[in-house]
Length: 208
Image (cartoon, rainbow, N blue to C red; front, top):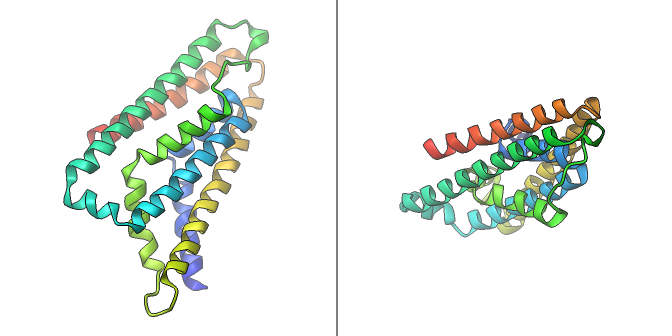
């Protein structure tokens, strides 16, 4: 039970820290609504599940022994974050061109496209795989039977905890939108801020 509490504490700390996943969910909720943001969250959750599976089969070891594979995935992820940042800038610009009464009615990607955004954002972040590879084994007890079962339970907790946090961020993002409802300038500024954040993270990832 103590180990489980420590594991949950570590997850809470990770999911509270600002990062591309959080920013993408918040930004999508502000610009396109909480349902689209929740579709992003589901994509993020499935990507985290994929990272857990990849960690189980030892892909992190491949990154360690062949650094070029890690850097290739990292640069692809950075490029995708830059693309998402540009998308937010473009949405902010379209808001500026809309009449005041149309503020908040922003052409947005569908649910499937939102899901794909979440999936790609997390899948193309090799640090997520490294995180799973490093964290999960710390809470596995080899002396106990059912190592695969232990791993599966921890993986499920990791994915579901992240999904809960992302759903909360989706609701918070819509609350932020509601505070400035009807003001196109505020919505443009919000989209530009999220665009700057994603662009900054993308540049940092590329230059690390």
